Length: 221
Image (tube, rainbow, N blue to C red; front, side):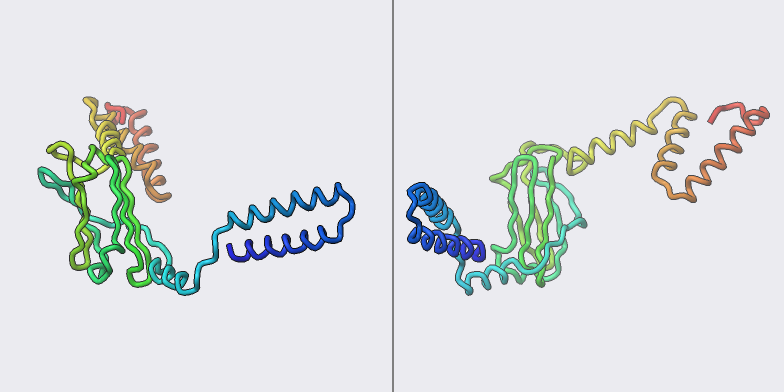
């Protein structure tokens, strides 16, 4: 920002010098318009921050940002509780641990913990929460995020995405036809498996079809 402001200032000085030398009205009009434009741009540029403020900000923000993926959770009648382990977090100033809540989400930001920032975001929570009733607590090596339930009912998981994933997985195996359930299982294993798993399933499939063609297996798997 400071460099951009400095370049604009240099341009303005040059335009002023040209304006002094210009004699043609049309040229002067163009230079005057450019002068006003540059002055407006400089005015809209943010002022450079004092060095001590910049150093303080660097100290507050710390180093690079790490996304938190590991956590534990449980629930009571009134709260969903998410536990995040962060060594030494209790030593930070309280303002360095921030949580923003909405009715169906929250995001956690821990600033400058051992030279790093830590973030965690949960979107599409399974059910609505009370923004005013939700909070966070700092314990030894742990941040506890407490989401206040709007309705005192049990949550089977944390997010809508998790629920949909579980329902799809259940539907894949929930069938009255055992052979269809086995086929769904094999398809899932094949899709998620490595090359060795795929070769094993292909081999089993070929052998099964050969036995079936010989009449050894009455049921189509």
